Image (cartoon, rainbow, N blue to C red; front, side, top):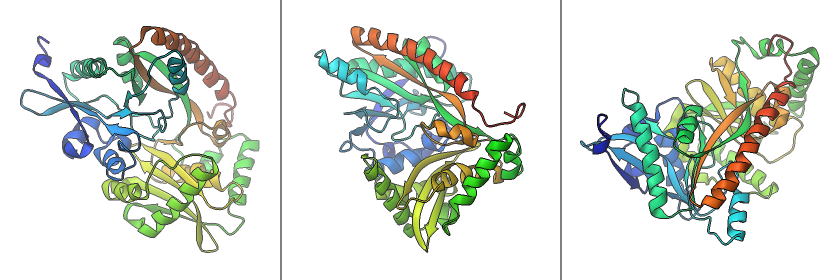
Length: 388
C-alpha cells in the first residue's frame, strides 16, 4: 500500500519453526516473554508435542520485505480439534456441526498448551510497526478465506493486539486469570505484612503444614536441572494428568529441548519425601514475570500444591526482583493467596455469517459477565485496607 512499503511485502506459510532463523524470529517476538520465543516453539515441535500427529500442524506466517528480510510473523497452527488451547470453543464447534457445518480444521494463532498472555502479532519496533501489524492481520484473514477454514483464533494476545484485531473485524473475547504483583516486597514476610491478620495466619499455617511430613524442596534453575530431575517431574506430570482424566500434552523429550533452548529461564521447584521426588512445579522466567506452567504430584501432601506453585513462586519473584507471578489458568482459590483477577484477551474471525452472529451475541454477554466477575472477585482480596 502506498507510502509505507506494504505493497512490496510477501507473506508465506512455514511448516515448522526450525525453518525460520531463530535470531530473525526473536527479533520480532522480543525477549520479554519466553513462550513467544523461537526456543520454546522449537521445543514443542522437535519433541512431537505440537505436531500434525497431535492435531497441531505448524502453519507459521512469515512476512518478508523486498530484500527477503522477515518483518512480521505469527505463530500459527492448523488444528483438527480444540484441545490444549484454554480458550474454549467446543460449544461453538458442536453447535455448528449440529447445524450441518464443518468446524474443523481451523487456524489457531497461539502458543500450544500455554494459557499465557503475550505477543501473537510479531512485528519489530519502529515507525512502520502499525502498518506492518495491519498487513499481518490482513494476511492472516486472507489465508483463512483462501484455505476455507471455518475460523481463525488469536489466543491470549496482548490488549493492544486485541484492540487492533477488533478494529479489523475480529470478534473480541475476554477471560480472567489470577496474578500476583510485587509491591516492592523485601521478603515473603514483608508480603505477609500487607495482608489482613486472619489471612496472614492462614498462609503461615499452610506453609508450615506443607513441610510437616518431612518434605524437602529444591529450586533448580537451568543447568542445575538434570535428566533425573526431569524424569521425576515427568512421572508426576503424567500421573496428575491420568488422575484428572486428562491427556499429557507434553512429551518427555520436550523438557530436554526446553532446558537446552531456554537455559536459566527454566525454573523447576521439586519436592521430595523420604528421598523420593513426589511433586514438582515448572516455571519459566521472563524479563519481569515468573510464569507458572505445569504441576504434577505422585503423593498427596496437605498444602504442597500451594507451597510449590504459589508461595515458592512468590519467594523466587521477590528474591530476583520480578514484578509479577502468573500462575496459570483458573483457580479462584488463588485470591486468598494474594493472586488477584486480571483480564485476558483473545480474538476470533469466523467465516460463516450465522455462526459469527451467534458467537458475537454470546461474546457481548460474556465480556460483561467477565468484567462484573473481576470486580466482584477483587473485593475478596486478602490485603489490609490500603495495601491491595
